[in-house]
Image (cartoon, rainbow over all chains, first blue to last red; front, side, top):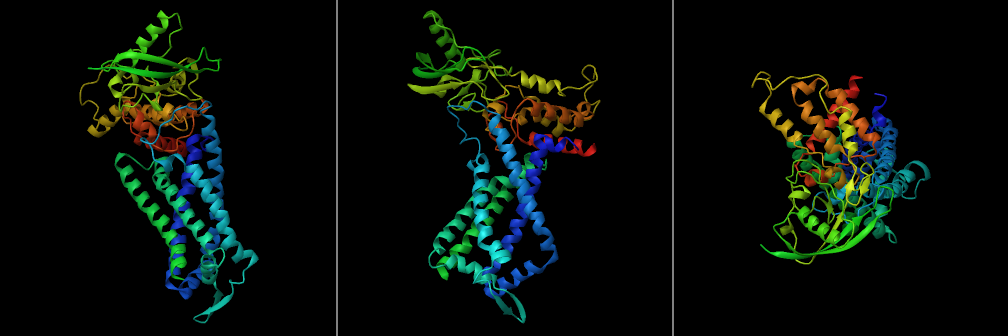
Length: 228
Length: 250
């Protein structure tokens, strides 16, 4: 196996495996966020579960490693790919032969990376390190827990920056959806789990998943912007 | 039948060490029935008659089966037609007074030799690394002596239709040679004679591909659209599978 991770396919294998892991994470993340629509008690209970469940705690550092491997190898592979064509074409037509998202995965990934830093500063940092005026203790059915609902809704309904944050989160969701529209099938193709029949099925599932995640995460800021 | 006038912007490069630049040419009253390479022949006649150096470009059989020709025409490998090589592209695909930009295949693995000619011996090196069966398999066997399913035989034949022209590399945004390598791996891995060495072949050919400076496949699928033989990227999935299993066995 020693040479495997030095080979192009081996490095791409790491991109695929970490990518599929992140795809599963996004589904868990979205499921938890969905409880925002059911009010503060429901969302705070889910957040409390996430904070206290041992499996989630174990998965947190693994998730961070997953992100790092995905990002580091994307940079390594992209540099190799840029070097593989020292002299560029003057005319290079790709619009008819591949999707825009598939050609711009690194750019989309970088934009998602920028979004991710902002996202961590907005929530993860405030919850775990710095704290926030909104992140107080509340009593839900006799259990004391953090008011995560106030922190989340506070960001989107903030009098001065609510609109800016909402737009940033909607853009982040759109970039993520575009990234996923190519990512899903591509990950299966790289680990060899595709053929002429399954390609169409995987692309269909991938597009459906991308729409669910892209639209789903966009609805949250829109909902709070319009109705709260 | 009609005649058209066209303007050309052609890449001229004296040798592999020179920098190279575009030159503008005009070809008048070219028949729409003529092939793209015949138009290039007419242009070269003009250049020779005027005492200039003709444009060097690769070509051989001119019937779309040898894989020798390959020009990057208006931003597309083998030009604006699908499932054809440059020699099978015809001038009827262009309109009167069209401007056509002609570039050589651009990839680190395919250095320019002169003008539009590129060195594709990197493909030979990949084949030498494993694109063969080591033992003599004898003459043509009796039909049905070795049972092979119709599906496998068809898919192996589809893979074997690769003519090694390099359009996949040329059109890939990463200059990846995965479609070529996967076709060569598939055509043998699907048949019993080639199955025996499948693992070793996948590893050796991929290793050679990586060493020769081709990029990494990002599954955009552009290669299979521009491939004159319509080779499917499903073969790339098989190559990935073969490579993964081969490494797991070690």
